[in-house]
Image 1 (cartoon, rainbow, N blue to C red):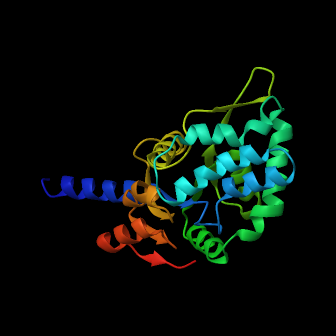
Image 2: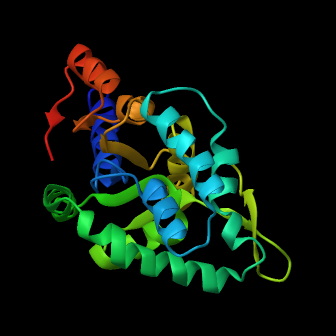
Length: 239
């Protein structure tokens, strides 16, 4: 009698573990694609005469601060980029962003990222892309490559269906990536019914995401993430 109860408990625990959803989470900019889609969007808006020279230069300072890892208000930057879309319908702006993705972003997908996603999908993982870029852009990527979930930055829509320049919540960057993953996975699979099996990121702001995964991978990492990966024995991938 005493021996049978613990065995049953062990078997139940093993069954529960086997039933957990396994997440494979990929950063977008610099990981799945070469380059940074918000920076590409600024150039695209300028080309389409939707940003002035002064506005484009002002936003470009953000790109420099990002490159040199200097602190800044990420919500404020996104408000500046979204200036041309303020007061325009969500449907029209999303279509503009989808076309921007098709023309500019799609050719920058890394074949190794696509192959990795397919491999994780084949082994039964729930494949996700989590990004500080805009939701419509990453949604279009999901349509193209068929991963299971896209979590990205959203902007507030007003009562008549037009975009504002206000970020809805926080940009999905740094520690916020983990928070949106948890909210999504708890709602989709139930608290305790999922695990972060794999995570892929290129930037030092992805450290929290990688550290939370059973199998973290630093993809073409920047110097700070390279140092962290070496100290933590995380595999470094050259995509």
